[in-house]
Length: 186
Image 1 (cartoon, rainbow, N blue to C red):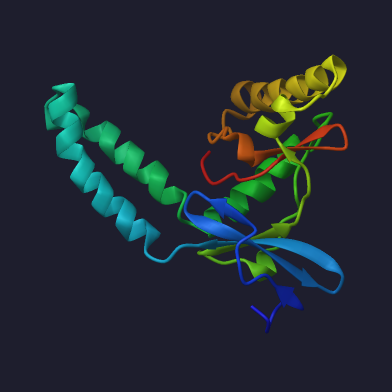
Image 2 (cartoon, rainbow, N blue to C red):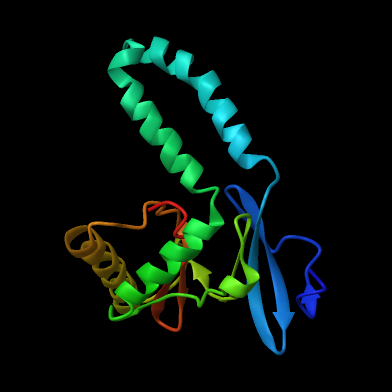
């Protein structure tokens, strides 16, 4: 990393579901560099093969009746391991949603990204769950709630493609607005 960046945190600044986020700097700019844990895709495939017979037994379905659903779940999970795809979706959706009032996105950097590494602007803010527990005014809460509503409403009804990982850590509240992170699952 130090061949690319001026500084790179040795320890992760944040955890991610299939990796960790490091803080890096270069030429005065601060970056969030999401690095995928080794072997994640292989582990997911293996885990699904183990879970499938157990799930079938618990649910009581025959394999042929639910095979399509299992393939869909596997495909969506494996898509999350492809940071090149996430980069593309992040950039496309950020552009398509840029007009929404009170919603913003980090800038992404293809030159510092690849299949297992995704680099974007470092964004400080309060995660959505922490914001919900804060002493924010009713007006602030309503503004953030409306931004979140507009964000999903436009994606579902207009784009028909949407951010499908509504974990509170994937949203930051900053300067009275909502910052959206992580388009790995859409």
